[in-house]
Picture 1 (cartoon, rainbow, N blue to C red):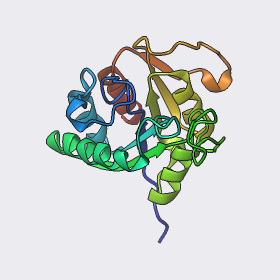
Picture 2 (spheres, rainbow, N blue to C red):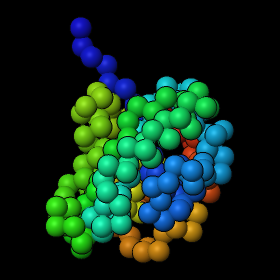
Picture 3 (cartoon, rainbow, N blue to C red):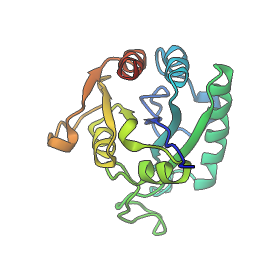
Picture 4 (spheres, rainbow, N blue to C red):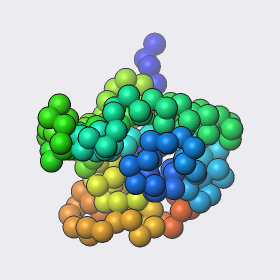
Length: 190
Protein backbone atom coordinates (compact mmCIF):
# COMPACT_ATOMS: atom_id res chain seq x y z
CA UNK A 1 0.00 0.00 0.00
CA UNK A 2 1.42 3.37 -1.03
CA UNK A 3 1.82 6.11 1.54
CA UNK A 4 -0.30 9.10 0.62
CA UNK A 5 1.50 12.41 1.04
CA UNK A 6 -0.33 15.07 3.00
CA UNK A 7 -0.52 18.79 2.28
CA UNK A 8 0.74 21.40 4.72
CA UNK A 9 0.71 25.11 5.25
CA UNK A 10 4.20 26.28 6.12
CA UNK A 11 4.05 29.47 8.14
CA UNK A 12 6.66 32.04 8.97
CA UNK A 13 6.57 32.77 12.71
CA UNK A 14 7.34 36.44 13.37
CA UNK A 15 5.03 38.86 11.57
CA UNK A 16 2.88 36.11 10.11
CA UNK A 17 1.76 33.71 12.82
CA UNK A 18 2.77 35.94 15.74
CA UNK A 19 3.00 39.68 16.24
CA UNK A 20 6.46 40.78 15.18
CA UNK A 21 8.56 41.36 18.29
CA UNK A 22 12.16 41.44 17.11
CA UNK A 23 14.36 38.64 18.43
CA UNK A 24 11.74 37.62 20.96
CA UNK A 25 12.36 34.47 22.98
CA UNK A 26 10.10 35.43 25.90
CA UNK A 27 6.99 33.22 25.76
CA UNK A 28 5.06 35.85 27.76
CA UNK A 29 5.41 38.29 24.84
CA UNK A 30 4.10 35.87 22.21
CA UNK A 31 0.74 36.98 20.75
CA UNK A 32 -1.09 35.82 17.65
CA UNK A 33 -1.04 38.20 14.71
CA UNK A 34 -4.48 39.56 13.69
CA UNK A 35 -7.10 36.92 12.86
CA UNK A 36 -4.74 33.98 13.29
CA UNK A 37 -7.09 32.44 15.86
CA UNK A 38 -9.79 32.37 13.15
CA UNK A 39 -7.56 31.40 10.23
CA UNK A 40 -5.66 28.43 11.62
CA UNK A 41 -8.74 26.36 12.54
CA UNK A 42 -10.03 26.92 9.00
CA UNK A 43 -6.71 25.84 7.47
CA UNK A 44 -6.37 22.83 9.74
CA UNK A 45 -10.02 21.92 9.17
CA UNK A 46 -9.41 21.91 5.40
CA UNK A 47 -6.92 19.08 5.92
CA UNK A 48 -3.61 20.93 6.05
CA UNK A 49 -0.89 20.23 8.58
CA UNK A 50 0.52 23.34 10.21
CA UNK A 51 4.32 23.66 10.14
CA UNK A 52 6.25 26.71 11.34
CA UNK A 53 9.51 27.54 9.54
CA UNK A 54 11.43 30.45 11.04
CA UNK A 55 14.78 32.16 10.58
CA UNK A 56 16.22 32.72 14.07
CA UNK A 57 19.43 34.64 13.40
CA UNK A 58 19.46 35.88 17.01
CA UNK A 59 21.31 32.63 17.79
CA UNK A 60 24.11 33.38 15.30
CA UNK A 61 24.18 37.00 16.38
CA UNK A 62 24.81 35.93 19.98
CA UNK A 63 21.55 37.47 21.24
CA UNK A 64 20.23 34.23 22.75
CA UNK A 65 21.14 30.55 23.04
CA UNK A 66 19.63 28.04 20.63
CA UNK A 67 18.21 26.20 23.65
CA UNK A 68 15.92 29.21 24.33
CA UNK A 69 13.86 28.24 21.29
CA UNK A 70 12.46 25.16 23.05
CA UNK A 71 10.39 27.44 25.33
CA UNK A 72 9.18 29.34 22.26
CA UNK A 73 8.10 26.09 20.61
CA UNK A 74 6.39 24.91 23.78
CA UNK A 75 4.43 28.16 24.13
CA UNK A 76 3.49 28.05 20.44
CA UNK A 77 2.16 24.50 20.84
CA UNK A 78 0.11 25.65 23.85
CA UNK A 79 -1.28 28.65 21.95
CA UNK A 80 -2.34 26.45 19.04
CA UNK A 81 -3.84 23.84 21.35
CA UNK A 82 -6.03 26.58 22.84
CA UNK A 83 -7.64 27.00 19.40
CA UNK A 84 -7.71 23.22 18.73
CA UNK A 85 -5.01 23.29 16.05
CA UNK A 86 -2.20 20.73 16.23
CA UNK A 87 1.31 21.92 15.38
CA UNK A 88 2.83 19.34 13.06
CA UNK A 89 6.30 20.85 13.14
CA UNK A 90 8.47 23.72 14.33
CA UNK A 91 11.67 24.20 12.38
CA UNK A 92 14.09 27.07 12.67
CA UNK A 93 17.38 28.17 11.19
CA UNK A 94 19.87 29.47 13.78
CA UNK A 95 22.41 30.54 11.14
CA UNK A 96 23.46 33.86 9.67
CA UNK A 97 26.62 34.29 7.59
CA UNK A 98 27.44 37.53 9.43
CA UNK A 99 26.79 36.09 12.90
CA UNK A 100 29.00 36.65 15.94
CA UNK A 101 28.96 33.01 17.08
CA UNK A 102 31.32 31.08 14.78
CA UNK A 103 29.32 27.85 15.22
CA UNK A 104 26.36 29.49 13.47
CA UNK A 105 28.04 32.10 11.25
CA UNK A 106 27.73 30.03 8.08
CA UNK A 107 25.92 29.87 4.77
CA UNK A 108 23.38 27.07 5.00
CA UNK A 109 20.59 25.38 3.09
CA UNK A 110 17.97 26.07 5.77
CA UNK A 111 17.97 29.88 6.07
CA UNK A 112 15.11 31.33 4.04
CA UNK A 113 15.06 32.13 1.13
CA UNK A 114 16.64 28.67 0.84
CA UNK A 115 14.01 25.91 0.90
CA UNK A 116 15.82 23.62 3.36
CA UNK A 117 13.40 23.83 6.28
CA UNK A 118 10.40 23.13 4.04
CA UNK A 119 12.15 20.25 2.29
CA UNK A 120 13.24 18.77 5.63
CA UNK A 121 9.73 18.97 7.10
CA UNK A 122 8.23 17.47 3.94
CA UNK A 123 10.69 14.58 3.98
CA UNK A 124 10.37 13.84 7.68
CA UNK A 125 6.56 14.06 7.81
CA UNK A 126 5.64 12.71 4.36
CA UNK A 127 4.23 16.06 3.24
CA UNK A 128 3.53 16.89 -0.40
CA UNK A 129 5.18 20.25 -1.11
CA UNK A 130 3.39 20.57 -4.46
CA UNK A 131 0.03 20.40 -2.65
CA UNK A 132 1.23 22.72 0.11
CA UNK A 133 1.46 26.45 0.73
CA UNK A 134 4.07 28.78 2.21
CA UNK A 135 2.71 31.90 3.91
CA UNK A 136 4.98 34.69 5.09
CA UNK A 137 5.35 38.42 5.45
CA UNK A 138 8.49 38.94 3.33
CA UNK A 139 9.65 37.85 -0.10
CA UNK A 140 12.33 35.55 1.36
CA UNK A 141 9.41 33.44 2.65
CA UNK A 142 7.85 33.45 -0.81
CA UNK A 143 11.13 32.45 -2.44
CA UNK A 144 11.67 29.57 0.00
CA UNK A 145 8.17 28.29 -0.74
CA UNK A 146 8.51 28.57 -4.50
CA UNK A 147 11.91 26.88 -4.49
CA UNK A 148 10.40 24.00 -2.48
CA UNK A 149 7.52 23.68 -4.98
CA UNK A 150 4.77 25.22 -2.83
CA UNK A 151 2.14 27.75 -3.74
CA UNK A 152 2.78 31.00 -1.88
CA UNK A 153 0.97 33.80 -0.12
CA UNK A 154 2.56 37.09 0.92
CA UNK A 155 0.98 38.88 3.87
CA UNK A 156 1.53 42.48 2.87
CA UNK A 157 1.74 43.86 6.38
CA UNK A 158 4.52 46.37 5.74
CA UNK A 159 7.35 44.10 6.91
CA UNK A 160 8.97 43.65 3.49
CA UNK A 161 11.68 46.25 3.04
CA UNK A 162 13.65 44.75 0.11
CA UNK A 163 11.30 44.53 -2.84
CA UNK A 164 13.83 42.61 -4.97
CA UNK A 165 11.71 40.81 -7.56
CA UNK A 166 12.45 37.67 -9.54
CA UNK A 167 10.29 34.74 -10.65
CA UNK A 168 11.01 32.93 -7.35
CA UNK A 169 10.01 36.04 -5.39
CA UNK A 170 6.61 36.53 -7.04
CA UNK A 171 3.87 35.39 -4.66
CA UNK A 172 0.90 33.52 -6.07
CA UNK A 173 -1.33 35.70 -3.88
CA UNK A 174 -0.95 38.87 -1.81
CA UNK A 175 -3.31 39.41 1.13
CA UNK A 176 -3.54 41.63 4.19
CA UNK A 177 -3.95 39.00 6.93
CA UNK A 178 -3.91 35.27 7.57
CA UNK A 179 -7.70 34.98 7.43
CA UNK A 180 -7.64 36.11 3.80
CA UNK A 181 -4.87 33.60 3.12
CA UNK A 182 -6.97 30.86 4.76
CA UNK A 183 -9.91 31.65 2.45
CA UNK A 184 -7.66 31.29 -0.60
CA UNK A 185 -6.04 28.09 0.64
CA UNK A 186 -9.32 26.42 1.66
CA UNK A 187 -10.96 27.62 -1.56
CA UNK A 188 -8.22 26.05 -3.66
CA UNK A 189 -9.11 22.65 -2.17
CA UNK A 190 -12.84 22.91 -2.84
